[in-house]
Every structure is written in C-alpha cells, then in structure tokens.
Image 1: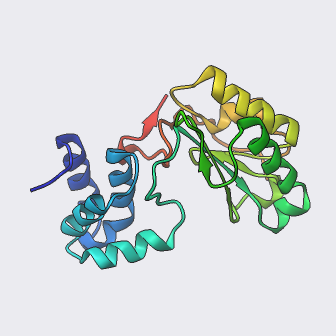
Image 2 (image 1 turned 180 degrees about the horizontal axis):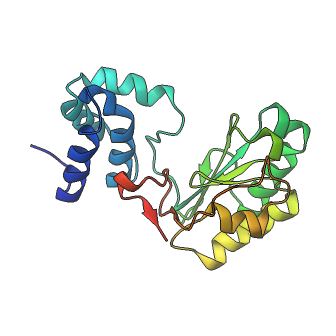
Length: 203
C-alpha cells in the first residue's frame, strides 16, 4: 500500500506517463518523494522502486550518487554556494564564509529552527557569472560576500513563501553569465527544484 498522499500519487502517475519506460522516471520521482516527506527516506525510496518497477537498491544507487537528493532534513531555505574552480578563483571561499557567518550555520549543517541550511556544491554551470549561489536551486550570479550576508538576512527576515531566481538576482546578484532572455515569474516553494509536475512551483 502506498505511503504517499493522493495528490502525490496523481503526480507520480502523470510523471511516469511522460516516459516510454517507467524506470526512466526514477529521478523526478525521487524529488517527488522529497517534496512529500521533506527528505528522502527509506520508505520513500521503496515507494519510488515500486512505482518504477526496479529494486530499492537500484533506487538507492541513483539517490546516493547525486548530492541534490537529501536523506537528512534540510531547512526551509537551502543555500548552496559553488566552490568549483571559476567561483573559487573569484572569491567563493569568502562568499561561503560570509553565508556561514551571517547564518551562524557551518557548511553542511542546518540551524536549530530548521530555517536555513548551508552547503558548498560543485559547478552550477554559471562560470561566467561566478560566484554562483542557489537558494532552493534558484540561481543567483555574481554574488559578493556583502551581498551574501544581505541574502541571508533577507531569508531570515522576509521569509518568502516562494524564492524566485530573477528577483534574487536583482536584489543580491551582480555579473551574469549572459542576459537571461525570459523573465521567470515562478519560483521554488521548498528546498527542491521548482518543477510544475512535482507541484513544487509557486508565484
């Protein structure tokens, strides 16, 4: 018997219908499991295995390979700072340090109230706009230590229901890799990617 809610089961059915083979839906269903429970639990991975027609070990092999799948609870806002080569050369260590200091949360940890989690990550694919930072996988480019501190204060004080990359870029970013062509009004409602079929998108 499914441990997922009816809306989540409906979304799982719709997602699987997009693929010629249901096992190919394993990655979006892992995000769906995270959105359902707030983290990726063993029960959630078993549920994904059932839906995809594969073994729990196969699901765990995927989930353990990608760092975006969180098996431990994270805060309402997941702040990720890229520390790969381009960002590192342009001050990523200082930006990450500013985030940790202002949040009072070391890399890889979550604050006591479950509000903010901080992590360093590998390349976010925005090398031309280094230093790159994400909040709930919404991108901000050209972040400086001062703007990183302002970002943390904004998340703490404004507590937005939705975080939007375009809005945060205007508030806390500087240099972009290139001019973003389409203004995006939607954003992320939790510490997982904003994706309409998952129900993780807000405006």
